[in-house]
Length: 433
Image (cartoon, rainbow, N blue to C red; front, side, top):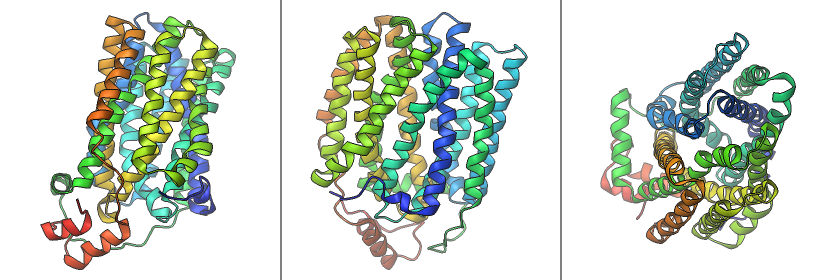
């Protein structure tokens, strides 16, 4: 149980600059996503294509995050993240240009969402590693919460901004501004100082790096627990991005501004969870108890979403789902960082992201297809019941890691000088079961 202020990591000037840049950029990414969803709704009838937005967003993370993690441990991370954000800017600008030329169709929009997802997939491991190097271990819980809070602040402002601007200036303007905001992230990254190298590791081939990840996951119980818990959480939480736009547009018959308000409500709940709830819970309860609370809130939200059919109460339910999402995701992210040695952080973070996004991809297909066949209400009820079953089955997979991560790493380095090929003794010292 960690007594840590939600805002403590913002005292770190380097993290603060990164955080502000990502809030601004993330706001326009959220507005971009709202505009893309609205365009697909205008250009096509079948709701399944709207559900596919979640699939094509998460699929690149499953396909490319692990090689991205290998690259994050082998290249200059700052230059790599700058290059990726230039790629993202180019894709968003290209989508705006196609829109102004009246060449857009649903499949081009889905393709652009996939290409943006490729950029985010390659960005994620390096970005996570940079953030974890910028902050201290004591600031890590705050950084985890603030990283989620950044997404939620962006999720509040972005859809509202998109919903306001789409009727006034059109979706193409939103796409173009989003492209320019990726450049703010590039500027923030370029101002960082490269962190000192903590260990001299022998040169390792690109493909051998994959074997290193596989070996660690196979031998380290803590990583197996983290990956399993992230897979289960992502599988069930994917019902929200798969079904929420369909419910909003096809069941509640919301307009563009109302759709933005729905996503804003969920993000608002996440902010409430991050600012007012999670620090209080962390000071009093274990990580397992915090994640359980979050998952139970998600179950409640799914049941209510199945029956509420008025926009205003539904927005309140979406806010409840946002609180639960933040509580669970923040604790799982902290557990993952504390189960990762710094010299392999990029690769192991990539494995965590890959497993999570693979589950989101699978879940999006399952929930989207089930929604098309059974209807949104029946699918949400099924998701609630299955999530409860998953909580019962995973109750022994504790993330209450007792040993301090720095102590684990010190023990490990004192046993072996080559952490790429650790002995079983070193693994036991690093991650006791």
